[in-house]
Length: 161
Image (cartoon, rainbow, N blue to C red):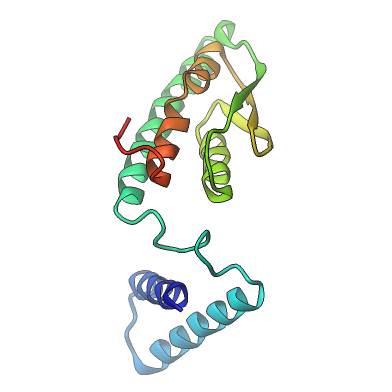
């Protein structure tokens, strides 16, 4: 039940923040939209401990800030590669996924794809296969900073990397 309440509160807050219109009819339509999404989530059986929308609590905004910084850095690296294409050395690498939950593994793969210069190709319970545009991008993934950050986000690592 607490997962349903958490999902409802987060969806309502997001809807209110994004809509910016607080007239009675719009609020009623927003409440209906939130109720419909919660009902669909229940029917799909995707509401539970692993799918808890507040699973990562206070760590999620910190992770997003860190990820945005990584995306900016990777964009600068890709821009450098565009201006000097001799540095492009594409390769496919496989890195371990040391995460306990499916949500953490998917977050890991999505974060790798969001970072310019890398694209997730295959995700299994134990490994992530990634196409990297250059050696630097591949080495950063192999060093495991992203994996450690996801583990911290998941709560399986007590200290922040």
